[in-house]
Image 1 (spheres, one colour):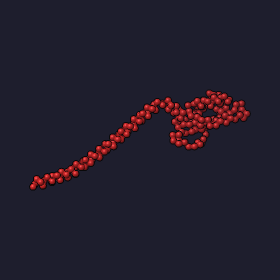
Image 2 (image 1 turned 30 degrees about the vertical axis):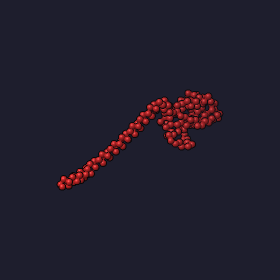
Image 3 (image 1 turned 120 degrees about the vertical axis):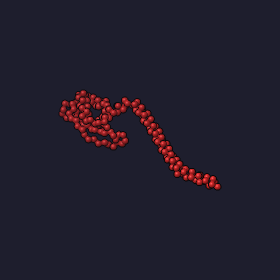
Image 4 (image 1 turned 90 degrees about the vertical axis):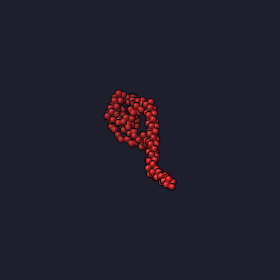
Amino acid sequence: MKKSFSIPILLFVVLLLAIFLVWPQYQEFKDLKEQVDEKQAELSETEEYLSELSQISEKLNDYQDSLKKIESALPQDSSLPSLLNFFQKESSENGLLLKNINQTEGKRKEEPKGILAKVKETYINLSLTGTYPSLKGFLESLEKSSRLIEVENISIDTAGEEFPEYNILIKVHHM
């Protein structure tokens, strides 16, 4: 009778040990396994992202010449002295006398959105004197320039002088 009574007690003790010792360890193991699976999923997503970035980087290398042209057309700084020097040099090379140059405020017709919101505009008012062919050459040199320059307005004053005076409003784009 003692054998039949000790077997259920032993089974009960083994069951209690399993519940209080093994079950928490099993739960901890299960939680750790879930964390490992999550980390592996994050790692695989990160690897996919990095491979996509490397593919994009390789594609960008194919467009380096175009990117350099854009970078020169839209310089990072609006270095006003270099811009004024550029206008002085181009006007003198084309036979025009630069009488006056100043920076003016211009208003945008509408606010750009997205990536164009980063592009800034500087307005320069030039007062030049010279012949019409010289003015034409000057405007052509501005057009051929690597910078993004727009001529907004040209006014001609022929009051009594040997050569007409040209007032040109120029818009320069930069980052």
